[in-house]
Image (cartoon, rainbow, N blue to C red; front, side, top):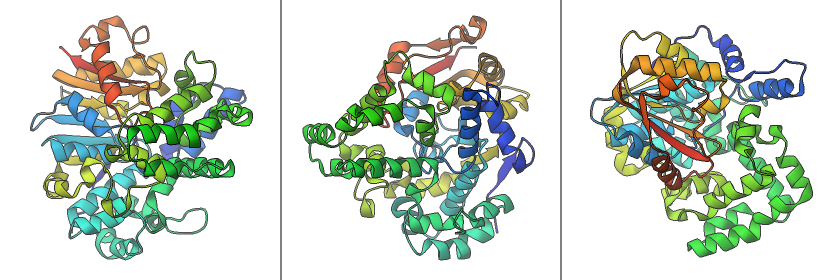
Length: 417
């Protein structure tokens, strides 16, 4: 029986907090900011993103992948990795320093390869709240998983339940982000508001009216504004203290920024086309697949997904660790998500030096930022950036089409050699 394969390039799994600390910690442990960073490291060490929050359709448009091209991408929840291969016959290396995300990606890939049909796959990742998933895991998936992935899913949560039971209890309500969204719904309900009402809207005008009636008033309440202005309040979104500052930018108050981003998610796109809105306001996808889904979960993509699942490999490492091991130009595209918002100038410079060293001519690098503008000028040496083509207007156009709506900027850099 074939096993899902994960390559660990950074040592033993017990080092995961050390890797994350290197990425996040900038201040001493006894300072206020240092304590915030260490609390974030603790909460970020488990499952964070049951669903990734970057729009794969925009990613694919920007990368314009050709058959056989090689992509290096931060894996996160794995949705985009799989969506890429449903649209392009490319090879993808999915990389992540969080072992929970590595385990999730391996579970998805094993399920694609070995469950008997789309309906079974959908029990896990569309319905994601199905009593049969435990049995399917034990009979079909468990024997085919590598030991580390099997250990993760058979491990216990704080209440002693196997983690694989997430898929019986509502997978998209699990993890740090799922818990954050659930908490947000609870707070709204305590104030007499119901985010799920937005999903009943039949027109864009009705979406806007419902947002203004149900959610907008929360952002004007004094105690809510106080809470939203604290960095720890956004840890559930996977936003470390350093990214909190970038997200706030020059805005007078974080509540104003969050209101504008949520308004765009609620009103900026037709709900029939925006599965991110269903996750935010419904805490899952529409029942029976009756609403929008990520490309990899579309029934009509199932056969292509199965045929190409061997094109994806999963690596437990950081971008830098992986690139440092390469001896020649390897990749045609790089997907950095929003990870650079976490980095110091020295880390950014080292990352882009490695990209230059390992990129094939014409390679595309895509990433998102909490703020609107690219963060690279003035932080990465101009001698490196001069080797890339960048069009700010093109980036703003991509940003406008990103249905997740939570980022300030989408950026595409093209390597010119």
